[in-house]
Image (cartoon, chains in turn brown, yellow):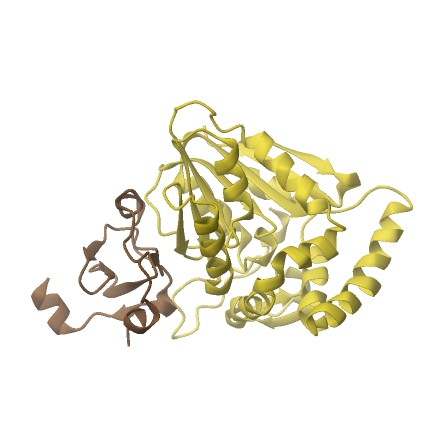
Length: 75
Length: 278
């Protein structure tokens, strides 16, 4: 599913905090929750998790993972 | 605005509502968009465009050199001069859309002060990967960030950038009006919009030479250098389908921008359109 795990491996994986402040969900324009462990940006409003690969947030619907009931329970 | 005379009888069942037709007027049917001179189903266009860029990403500079005879370097320089980013310590935030390979952002960062930063937003992961490496080579990771995103659905907070640039990108967007509306949304009041794009050449003789170069030379060069005449043909055709200077200025005004103007470069082979969010 999330290819971020395999594709990473280099050190530049952290997302700049100043960039995180600017980002919103591209579909709903609402704030995102940053899951640093899973390297995902979560849009509860859209029910999507956007992956971060090599420090680059992939903010298009096609790249996102659909949130599961589990995700919602944890959040 | 005269291009929007499409009836909106679309919205197919699984569609997410992103289908106000913009570039399709002359093809008549409702859900098609132009892909070069071909009409393709609107929902497929972005995927086809993405393939072109995935195919040319590694040779993008070479491609631009071929297509513009090296002039794109001067044109980009002109764009950055017009941007007039602060050289002192004032902070300044640029959003560079479709700037995947870092061309604009790197030059801008090198030309401006330490608090002038850029976010590159590009839909093509291949183009961004080229840019990411170049940004690291230039040691500019702290000032330039990359995001994969669609110009029609920007993943940024409203009113957050001082400037928005898009160089040779807007003609590859399916719904230009949506991209312009998003540009307007993310700019701060007082923010600057600048768009560099191939345009309509208006100089006699030069226009003929340019036609010959575009339709006879470029696809052959593309075939020779990249084994990929198709992608290059798309690029040439998409240039010719793009609205003329005045028509595009109208679209920019239509998105809400003020003091919209344009400057022709090399007899109009390219043009820079500018506007302000007031």
